[in-house]
Length: 249
Image (cartoon, rainbow, N blue to C red; front, side):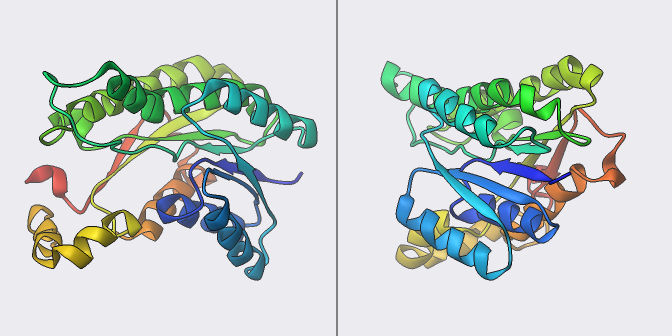
């Protein structure tokens, strides 16, 4: 049976590394994003590696777009083996006192709603998959509340931890395992502006990491790949820290 993975937010960064890792394992890669130009480049790179892929443009903060696009996937593919809810992000910074309702709802939509709605729509396909798995993304902020102005981000990621455990309980009867990863500071394009405009600040990031370096997207992808493998067949409802000891300091 054809192995199929869906990775949201996978036109670059960690998501693309995850898509590539699964593709090199023989999976057909369905990847999502909203930057069509970047998506085309990602698709071309995957093709050069001999990976079969297909791009789906939809905004993960919008339920109707998620529903419509998962329906398109279901019309073409009769099952799904792995869902990686990679899409998410800080969304900006705001202290609670001055936080607008619009900002509050956007951050929750970006991190929590996106994972919930995508998972809900994919469950019927995952039930038909081979040893199906779901991967969500937590954060150090889920435990420490986030840095200045990132409190609602931390709140949304704490919700992801509980969602992961709740889904693991809810879906165990179908053989669907659900886990989460919690990446620390990973060297992606997200930090390019800081690296260019304030190299001293960028270098200082390493001081808060026990291993004194930033992580690489491939180091997150390899853990996700492991969690979805037979080697992790007895692991569900867990959150794996991938942060070089950043949560210790």
